Image 1 (tube, rainbow, N blue to C red):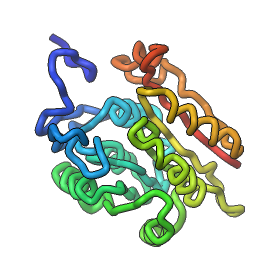
Image 2 (image 1 turned 90 degrees about the vertical axis):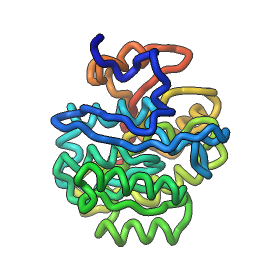
Image 3 (image 1 turned 180 degrees about the horizontal axis):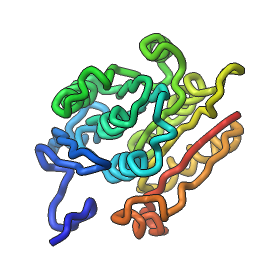
Image 4 (image 1 turned 90 degrees about the horizontal axis):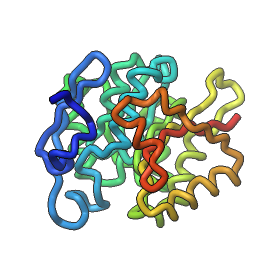
Length: 242
């Protein structure tokens, strides 16, 4: 049977580890799911790799090399760190992998080291909206990020944190007059309750962000059908603001 990222014959979130062949490498990722109602982490659901992260990682490998090359890359709500690890293989200037949950940060650090990228992926705690955390990230990166990555961070469980997420993106990503790049926020998400996602997109639009839906043809074939699902769509967006 051919491999599929969306195979219905197992619950991949509960596996102790998974292997992802993305781009030219196979990435080994440790997971730490628990039946505790929070998926294994204090903040919730950050101990496994969800479809949004897989979608984003595959897109970066196939279409994001120009975006990532020589860029300062920051991942928010990284969980186990798949997208940061993949980004580190695309010749960035620096990759900083962050989460608000210390357990997730430790898991991402472990995964980066297991994949031989411990020196290339810098893992730290970033609580959305926390000014000292954001200042520390900018200092560690040697400047504001050129690219922010995130997957499934606007789902229902995080609805109360959406204003802090937007504040974090705007604080860290707004362009400087001397920048030659257009700062970009790549967001992958699978709709679950619909309400929190709608709140996020409405707020970003009202604040002047341009939102472009990545075409289905650019997505990995395992996710193209899901991207057209009207009930639980899996989609990838690029937000920019000049």
